[in-house]
Length: 452
Ligand code: ADP
Image (cartoon, rainbow, N blue to C red; front, side, top):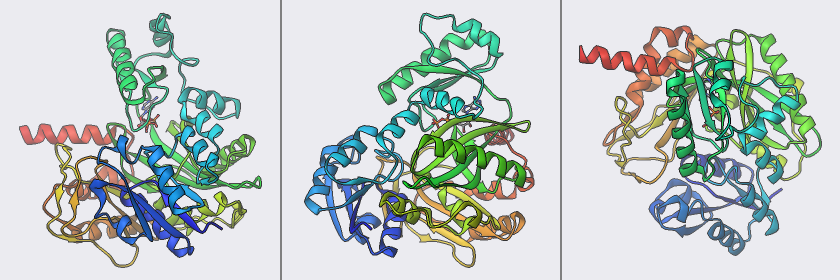
């Protein structure tokens, strides 16, 4: 097992990883920007190294600085967390070249799945159905319009290198196609330095269903069921639950088996998430994330498996500590993303937290590095806490969630807590009847009601 791990990340995920390391008797090196000297993961780490000024490109994305810190501190492995360098194949290669372990899949798998076009091609080869769309990247001089006609409007233009909902634009009709193409290409170029785009049919009322997998280096792979992440805004997840209120045990087992077969064939190891859109009883692959997901705790709550611990174990070359038949799905879990944003305008709200009182009690878990007096820096993702609630069944889980949301106090900044309180009381949410477009429609109805 590793002796010392460097966590190349910040915020709640850095703290989550640190906690797993502590419980495994592994020493932790925190790296941080000069804006994060007071961060919880820095305070709790055994050692910490400031790797640069606040902008992420100069600190959390500064590979040389991170590798130097790792060398100086003598770490065996680097955990990249989520976002930042977690899916960067070049970084993974550099870590290995420095004689350390990258806690994640191989650079080849990162590359294969990091490009959504090759990921879709691979999924098809592995027998996984994909969303109907273009064969590979769109040729800027090709006949894009007749392809869109064939698929049927609306269509979605997506960036091959996309992530975080960026580089994606819908064309409702032929008249909007060129604008959508230009928008997606421009955003893809500026966000990812790669303007390759592809086209997909824009599904009208799908749910976002993703399957968690984990595989070791000994050829064992298992799935840990699905998460339903359909409550989204701007293609970004806001509220997630496991299991999905819309999936039967048979559908779960069938999709899980297909995915595990594919993962084994691929020779993949580490944690991973295969994302699907689910409509009219059919699953369509959209992408694979080759890292831990923000919403992994809900899977932990219903399986009783510490995913980060297991991820570290398989990275150290140990075999999985369970088989598929050992995994029992029990109860229901919901995660609310508590972002430092206004619940109405979604404007980021950095600043100082005046009062902070997190909820607790049976079945309530808060993954958060913030505290009273903490100053939220304006430079990074606005996620400041995840409220994760478990119940024996969905009804109990929702009841407990409403109770926890009532207890939760954060003042001095705006957060999404009021939005989550409203959602937890909303009939469609209570009934589990929502698709990926539901939240945005509901938000625009609210605005209209307030204006009237
Ligand atoms: P990213 O990597 O940027 O997160 P994804 O491909 O995972 O992009 O898609 C993010 C979200 O965008 C999905 O969860 C879904 O809500 C929406 N989306 C993606 N593809 C489609 C599609 N073909 N039709 C409708 N919605 C889609």
